[in-house]
Image (tube, rainbow, N blue to C red; front, side, top):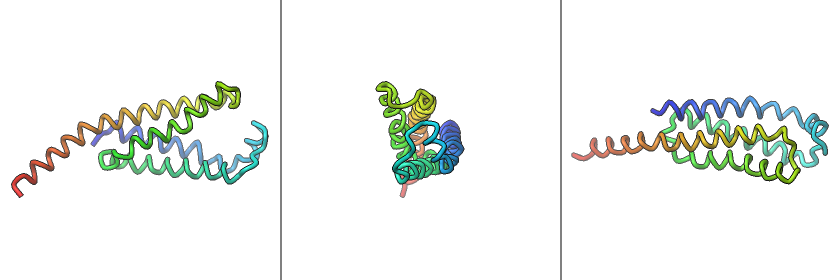
Length: 138
């Protein structure tokens, strides 16, 4: 069991839920604070729903990182899918600087997900070897 991966994915999932769930109630405020108003609410709410689903997936991975190790590279992509476009859009002046800390945090979490993937590799190899040795005489 890799405690590092468990902690990383637990913190990521809880943080994501804390940040994203309130956004279901902020459509009007976001439109006022960062005009123009949201014109396609299905994209707004769909984005929030997909992100929340991923936060739940992080919590599932946290329960058994070894078992769900194959999903870890995909979780890195989930973080890059937000962070990279935000950075590019900010460079073009199309996103407010107030969004940058969230992109930076996603990059940090993506790096921690990569570290979790590699830290669980040694446990995966030893687990596979132990299975092989247990079934060698069968």
